[in-house]
Structure formats: structure tokens, C-alpha cells
Image 1 (tube, helix red, strand yellow):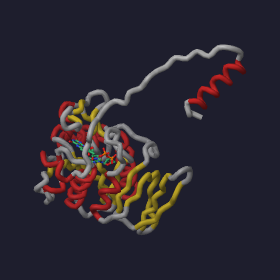
Image 2: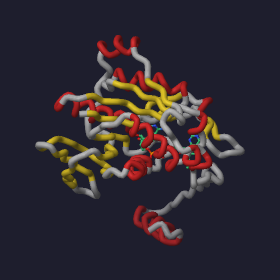
Image 3: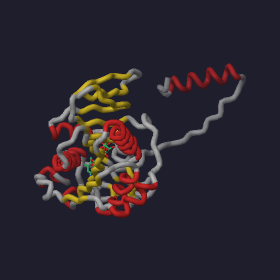
Image 4: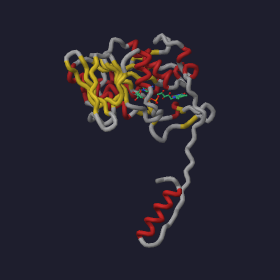
Amino acid sequence: MHLIVCVKPVPKPGTVRVDPETHTLRRESAELILNPPDLYALEMAVELRERYGGKVSALMMGPPNAAPLLREAFTLGADEMVLLSDRAFAGSDTLATSYALSQGLRKLEPFDLVLMGKASVDGETAQVGPETAAWLGLPSLTQVTRIFREGDLFVAERLLDGYLEEVEFSGPAVLTVEPETVSLRPPSLKRLLAVREREPRVFSAEALGCDPEKLGLSGSPTQVLSVFSPETEKERLVLSGEPEEVVDQLVSLLRERGLI
Ligand SMILES: Cc1cc2nc3c(=O)[nH]c(=O)nc-3n(C[C@H](O)[C@H](O)[C@H](O)COP(=O)(O)OP(=O)(O)OC[C@H]3O[C@@H](n4cnc5c(N)ncnc54)[C@H](O)[C@@H]3O)c2cc1C
């Protein structure tokens, strides 16, 4: 069984700056970490491999300085590390990102499952999983909490609004994994030693056979118009009187302001 986990490099909180002209994140200046929700996808894939055999590949689209994060994915259980890195990917929105990832996934075929985090902690659109599935013409399953095999089929549990849905499918498919549904483990000593001998495979846009029109800003139909911190105002109001009076005052104030 070949399981591919897409892991995104995200800026460590507090280390990122926004380009005032293009309104995009200046990731080159930020310290990078593995997108925390992707760790659950990786652990789920590692548990599947431990149960059914096979291999886990970690796939990342990112700048060359993100390569150490793939090595971290190796220490956490991945067998292969693949980095898609090219200037042509810069400025990609979710559509262009998912196109590049789908081209990377085609390069790694055959595979049984692609696992992704539920969303990134920086972009937070949760679009990349379903979009990648669409580029590949594969089924997409979001909010997966558990997965197991039944004969030749996979069964996935999905967390919906207060209930679980069980879905049976034959694979390959693209899944996004609900965070905190598996227990994360620390890296093993064996892998910490083995990673010293390992390097990620790196693919350029050309090596993936990408259509340049579908990458970067030209392949991105969405444009960031502005990025700003919302203005907030604080008002201090002291209500006085007997407790019943204060409650009445508070309720009418909240009603006046349309808050209840
Ligand atoms: C108009 C626009 C312009 C942008 N320009 C830039 C730019 O110039 N530079 C820039 O760095 N970003 C840019 N971005 C952000 C970039 O589009 C997103 O980082 C990227 O598309 C992923 O979207 P997301 O973070 O919402 O992922 P989500 O959809 O929330 O992520 C879901 C899952 O997809 C997988 N995934 C997502 N991205 C990757 C990845 N790169 N590698 C592996 N797995 C991944 C992970 O498993 C992740 O948990 C831009 C976004 C927009 C909308």
C-alpha cells in the first residue's frame, strides 16, 4: 500500500511579514514549521502502514529552505521525502497549489491514498484537499477521523455535525484528516539516526510536466486585495444598583445593541 501525505511548511507564529505591495506573505523571512494539522494525517498514514504494510511518502510544495521539515516528517514515520520546489510556484493560490501537488502526486503513482491535514494554520482555506482530488479526478473525503480496510475496500469515518458518517470506497482517494483523532508520537531514535543519510527528492515544475499557465500568479484566479488587522474598540461600562437592576440594565443594553 502506498500512502502519500501532503505536508505544508507554514510560518512559525510571530515570524511572518506581509509584503505591502503584493499583499502576499514574505515566507522567505519566516521561520518554518510543519503545519500542525498535517501531523495527524502523517500519524494516521503511519498507523495504516504499521497495520497493513506498505510505505508512506511525504510530499511538500515549498521553498528549498523547507527541506528540513521533510526530514522531520521522516523522523515521524515517513519513508520517502519529496519536495516540489521552483520559482514558478511562487504566488500560487489554492487552485495553483493543488495543481502543482496533483502533478507531484502523478509523479509518485501508483498510490492508494493521499492524506492531508484538515486545513493549514496560515491560509486556512481547507480547499487544497478537495481541489487536488478534482485535478486528479479522484474521490475526495474530508474530516476523516478513522480509516481501516475491509477486504479490498477502505472504510473511512467522517465527522459531521454531531454524528459520524461511514463511507466505503475502493481507492485511490484524497482524504483530509480531522486533527486530534490520533495520538501523536515523538520521533524514534532509529529514525533520528537514519535521517542523517537521507535527502528529499526534489522536482521542478518542468520535471513535473506542469503547464506554466496553471502555476503561480498566472494560474491563480483569486487575488488578495488587502491584508489588514481588523480595528477593534474597547468600551468600559460600569453598571450599578441591586443585582436584579444590573441584570435588567445589562439585558436591555445587549438588546439595544442587537447582541441578543
Ligand atoms: C491570491 C493568493 C495568492 C497567494 N500568494 C502566495 C504567495 O505568493 N506565496 C505563498 O507562499 N503563498 C501564497 N498564497 C497562499 C497559498 O495559496 C496557500 O498557502 C496554499 O494555496 C495552500 O492553501 P491553504 O493554506 O489555505 O491550505 P489548506 O487548503 O487549508 O490546506 C489543506 C491541506 O493541504 C495540504 N497542503 C496545502 N498546501 C500545501 C503545500 N504547499 N505542500 C503540501 N501540502 C499542502 C496540507 O496537507 C494542508 O493541511 C496565496 C494565496 C492566495 C489566495
